[in-house]
Image (cartoon, rainbow, N blue to C red; front, side, top):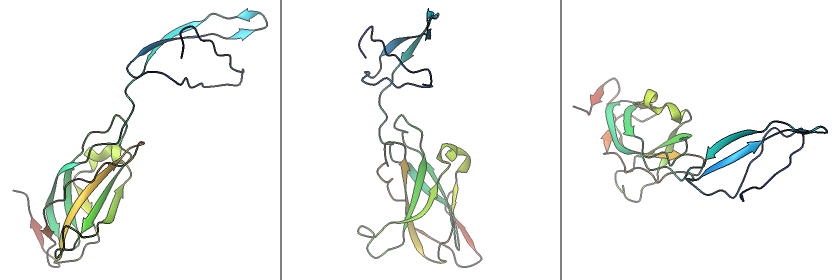
Length: 169
């Protein structure tokens, strides 16, 4: 927006977006209404832009706190938000212990209330098979896109039916 630029809007316009602004810059905006009698008293405000959002950083420090027969408790540390709220966390699992590098990752859960992640951790990951090996990874998503996946967790074996294994000391 050039200095001194005036934009006239209709009397039904409730909002207006100004484009072409630079990041980390303060801008002065002056607003007034105009009738047949002329312009009214103007109001001045200062608005500052910020850096554009980017994709979030990958979550890290994944650890399985407890393994049960059909579920595990997973904890992780969120990465950077990328200057935008995290919308979802996607938890993926892999249970191919023969070819762990080339194994396919499957989505196990999508956490929709990602802004509440601190209240949600550790996450219970359900619907697993007893006495099976699993690895987990997590992706964060904001309005720009998805993060790279986290590093995979250590391999954990779910317990036999009716027992549980604690993996954190």
